[in-house]
Image (cartoon, rainbow, N blue to C red; front, side):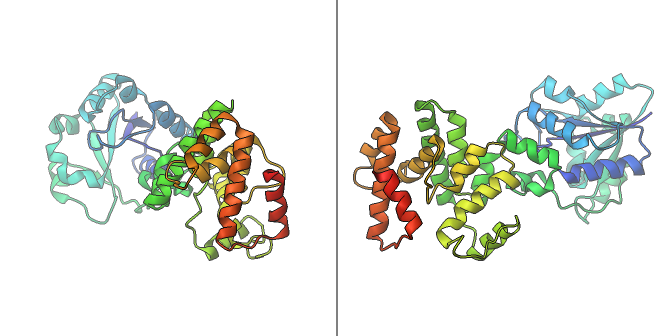
Length: 364
């Protein structure tokens, strides 16, 4: 059999990985292609990977609609520690002594290939195959180690882009898995938002989680509602209206969606349809976290409170409000609403009748 080994962090696997695998499978006329996620990539020691379990599960989802000859090996993740290629190739050479092995790597690895430990042994045991990551190829090591180079298109997808919030680069099943398991959440927040806004989001998440736990809700539910509540806060108005409209809503109707409502509506749509959180309570809490509503859940109230009085919010009486909200959520919520109402009045904000009705209900 002709078997290819495709290693990497796969943190997470993305559409580019699948395209490369399919291209190599066809070009090399393979009988089997094995994805081998690393425990710790020796070239990315500082990068914090999601757990092996999550990364393996995502690979399985990504290849579920591909060739039945695509597999996942847990050799490196079960071994643990730093994953060295020579150990992996030795393992598979012993496992498949009569088969022809190929080892797939990116062309960006070629310039330093001569520095790899046991490179001579590895290239004797397996045919190294490089896929193009750019138009530049290190021809010296290609020639020295008789590397096959694939003439594949250059794919723009990258795991880094996914971890920064470009979830369209993943298979739909992988995207859903990321949202359901709240993967890469903090990294996405820090990539999409400014440093100051991200810092506030983390503070709101921590206080919302604390409030949720004290008042017998899930800590994680409070935490992730807080973490994502401002995910669309810095989206320009025109873009926000276009985003809302892309879901069949009339985002350009300024009566339905006045400017101050945009980021909460966009945020709820983003967590539901882009990140794919599967928690309607979190989605709803984000949707009303600025304006509130006539009907509110406990999580709605917790998120509103956390946004207004978490660490970083500094005004007279904020410490007393935090203590009150931890002791008595309903009374604390009432006081935070009143404080917010008076703050907006002092700023000269003019409320419409619907907003006034909401404030009156929750202040009395």
